[in-house]
Length: 138
Image (cartoon, rainbow, N blue to C red):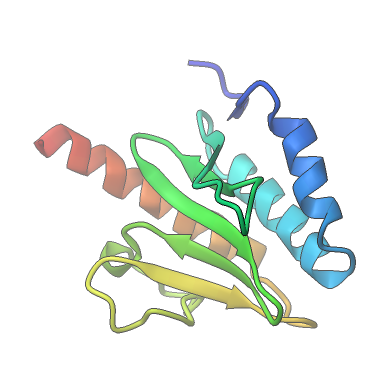
């Protein structure tokens, strides 16, 4: 397996167009998040899903052995939603949203907030480990 992340054919151009729509801090945060997620482990796949009229470009989704997280941009935050966040050890306390959910958890990164990149990488690796274990038991 190659250690380079897999990005769909038009992924880079699509990414550039997506981020260009969010000038300023939101685009910067999203770019940082992408770099950290893709660098967290080999074999991570980046795709675009759930295009709709209000969001024709869709949503970036990162996966390995199943979905890891999505990256969405809102007016006051960049939101990373982990598909199985409730099952992950978040020792650094990154999760700030959907804390009562039985499956998902999210991180809302707001303007001027410093992202703990190391802890985010750890969380992505924990999500990969969860997906791998889950795949082996199914």
